[in-house]
Image 1: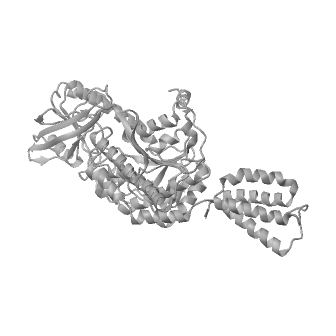
Image 2: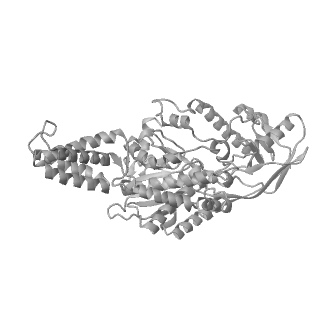
Image 3: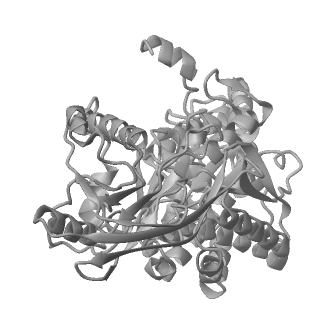
Length: 600
């Protein structure tokens, strides 16, 4: 049992004082009844035992001073005063704490530390199945492998569950791009997702477009038919004087714990106008290239050191207009070609890209499985955990987000193993979900939330909304867990502080009121459901691996995944064992009403 915050202690003090006063004064018995009804259902088994024991002792002693004011000067024997003091103090301690079963925590640690499967799971998701672009053959194969693994472990209801229509799948079968003149260079590149192939070899001198505004497009009219087009100036690359990988230190965690300044704009706010201008210009440029009949688009990577950051160049929607073949090129190679062209030196490129689209099944799928609850009254309630299974395609999606998936998989494996070994069963049902379509806008988790819990636009809720307790997500790379974001839900602070206390020596102790965005817990939070993302060490996530060709098995830290899986297992278990569901924030306004109020 672990103590939580001062606020709970004050509540416990007042409630316990009321119980003592009621026992000493028969006229206040109604207060005692209310106290038992209001508070006893929320107590742990140990707490309830202490309550009952305290009540019986107090009832035996109260007849000696039943008509006297407890807070006044009453004459009690030394033995009675000691008994009251001990029981009063002990019950205060019990009721002030969020229950944490340290015996179960110890068993979770032992299983997770000594028998971890995280790297085996990671190997299959990354090295074996490779990148997992939503609705691609790789994604389907990896999804089915997860279902088979859950069945092997003895979980129930393991399945691929459709969340709605996604659109076309896509994969690249083969590609090559090289500079033939003035010197041979095997160019580091990768095709952009949902773009077609070149339908054979294309060769020629590329055209470097310098476009800062829409009017600059007219300078290239009539010159681009069948051309290889380089869109944009090369980036000026500078040395990195700071380490690419880092962990949180005391200062960064202390800053993270501070609530954001009320009314303050996010860091990107002042840059939004320029971002929108650039995005609009890019769309017009791509449409111009299509209208002019360009053959291939080449773009510089947003990363350096030969690392490619590759997203989409076309659309997965079934009715989308065909895109042009497009490749992202290493910034250094792009810069070399651009400098040659600017200095009047002839360049000859040779390109061959073979891509395929898949339209046999346009539905999107999540992977789900369950560890059923064992409590007669609580087994229909739900605790969830997960991460997104889909990835971008230049790497193998190791840190984004096979890491989060294998942590969640390992966490539920640990809990299943504890049930098999020791008979430790969760009260509530625990459901794991590995999401599809996260990279295209949280499609899988939002579709799932709409199907099971309610419509965000209208806030029309389903029955499952009431039976839901919490969702825990991991999707900020492979760094160890350092704490958790509360998503502005202050009521869960003392609960999570208690859950983290057994893991302080593993570096996890920070609880922050802040929100964090960009991943699947938002689908739950948007419906007023408790959805949380853990704080993680950043490592190389934003500097090297995120959405890049270096998002591979080699850049994952084994010990961090083990630590994270143990913490997630403990959070999920204790949430499943609480007498009550986690506290919730007020329901948000319907999205359509908010949009109408903002004039949209």
